[in-house]
Length: 287
Ligand code: ADE
Picture 1 (spheres, rainbow, N blue to C red):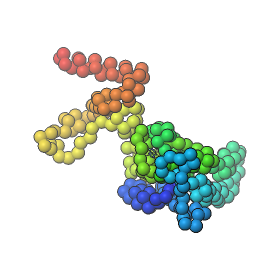
Picture 2: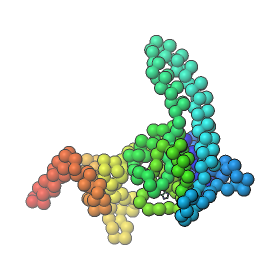
Picture 3: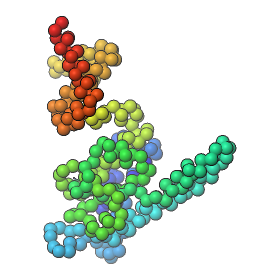
Picture 4: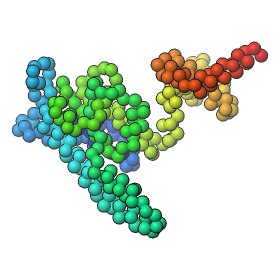
């Protein structure tokens, strides 16, 4: 997965994302993160990239020309790389298909098409659809993603119309620019890319899996500040541990995210699960 970030503050992206888990993932080649400075593409001799909005109003707008040219440079790079990859890949695939005497022309055609499709371009804006785990899962399937970060009061609408495929917000609040939202999205997407997390299971079983929040976790020591680790977790009884964790997930979701709980409980199988759990508990109490 290759991330390309169009920004006026490339150092913010590069410093922020080349540390810890994502830093290691970049070093190991599972992902790459490239920040492109929009200012490098301005035709203005004073390196200006912003101007006043027509019709008046507060603040400055980023102009169309430098944003468009910066994007075009990234798009060209992506298409050239894909073309090169296909020139190596397609003859190999054809040879393999001949060997196997299988006609997989569709596979070849698909890969040829993919090489010439434009990348998805995500513009970070409070006016976009709110980013979710489901969106992260969908975006993690792409090979290249371009993020466009606005600053000041935004970007000239005409260039957005030409290059943007997705308008995304990270929540209903306003930040000073799109860099932090882009970093948030890149982090959430990267951890779904194979091999980025050491432990692939942990990307799967966690908050928002199955619409429930994650259960509480404990590590050593067994007792700290007079608080003991729940006994079931020390029992080694896997079925009981799993049951306890699911129950805790339900309790936590109901308390902290009633909106998610409503979504979860609206599914028939979950209602049945809860009824069964409550019956088992009532039976235990009456003993
Ligand atoms: N730019 C400014 N605020 C933002 C937000 N909440 N989400 C995405 N981009 C933004």
